[in-house]
Image (cartoon, rainbow, N blue to C red; front, top):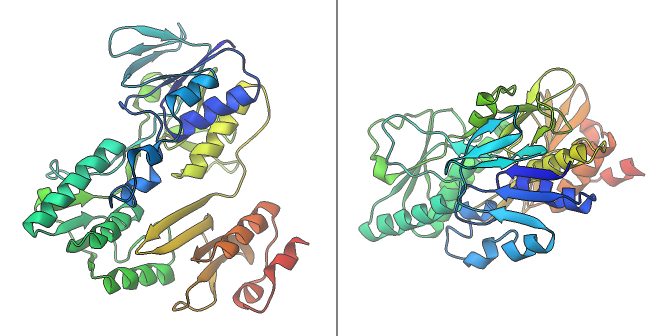
Length: 386
């Protein structure tokens, strides 16, 4: 394996490239990014960057010269049109062909759209964020409100940022509660109260019909960029299907990041959209190419900042049959511990980094408190790791 070609230049792509080099790969490593920018951090786009609190340099994940020092070639503004598995090359939009011995697909995802809302803003990349920031300035100057369609993480983070900038904000969510896919009703209600306390007009179980698209941000999720893989005959099901090692259905091709769905041992598909998922998935994919056994098995984790409060999630709470509160909801910090069949499966914490880190350690170690122990602030959960 001499030539490794990585389609993408985001978190998963960089993680894969750096892990390959650190693991001893001596051949070429090339990143093909379709954006004009080099690798950058996406989480600040809906928060500090959008609020004008960050400089462009603070967004940079890896400067081109830093990648070059590691022998990683970065090519930006390059669009891949097709994968030729038989010839082991990818066709570029400019008509040229780039050969590979091993191919990494880290193509990310694209925001979902709504018919009739072609003029609405979306937020995924840096250019989206710059366009949205300009739109927020124009709305503010005209005394017009921002309407966010979608009560998920991106929509709510932008809503919080827009309120901070002084805009009137309405959030329209089709479901009867916020963050319904990610959080239990207790926390959905807590976040609803948080946003209302900061002046956000929440409309739950509502439709966006009649809203001016020019005043809208669509935050209704993303679609995996798996078109290249599909056209090349790779197994896809709402994303490129991989195993815990990043292996696709095709030899010499691995994948990582938001473009993927992971096939679990029981046959279910797991989709993770997070920095950690991209980073660990990239490392697992790199290990596979290096002939090493390093599956992505760490507990999934995620975070969100809204109105000065930080939510941190460890594990996946879907399927929980019991949830207990540790602390009180109106305290400066608290956590919610989720159980299935008496076993801990996830913990959501608000402004409680200690609980979050402890939860990750417990879940990684397969240790579980009882629901009663988790609900008792006097019980030292760290003793379960002894």
